Image (cartoon, rainbow, N blue to C red; front, side, top):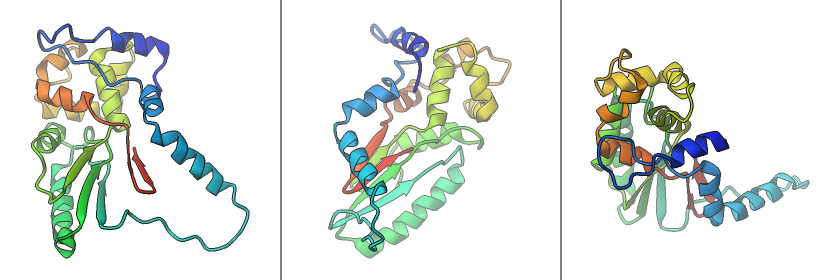
Length: 212
């Protein structure tokens, strides 16, 4: 969870209104988002109670709500080729449940390490070809590192991101490492920045809580 110093830097980025390529406001602090989602404390409490059970009776595994099928995709890390493979697998499986409600949840870490971070973001913005009734996009720690670096929440943020795969992401947007961090946000399409800004923290489906 970001500290008060990063919170101050984040709040200073609020567009009044958007008047250029400055990065839009980073999502609210992760802790604040978690607190705002009233379903999370109750789910965590149930999980704690389960962990304290002393009996050894077999437990029935949780299941998706009746009539619902959930597909969860995590840690794409700039690999559009693997994302397309996952989508083909989802489409093949979806044919076996034509009458079911289908939810596709992406659990974050779309960027870094692979060569296609920009292409992955663009693919997700333009609605991937999966037969889902709902598509949910959540934030991973790599998206948070990227936003922190673009916003300059502290002087270490750009270096920290570069050390964790950020250089590959920058290249996918045509940005070389010789470009100073203060210019990175201006060279990334605004729709991509807005997509990253608006990513959710968690999403509940029945007894499941999806979070990075």
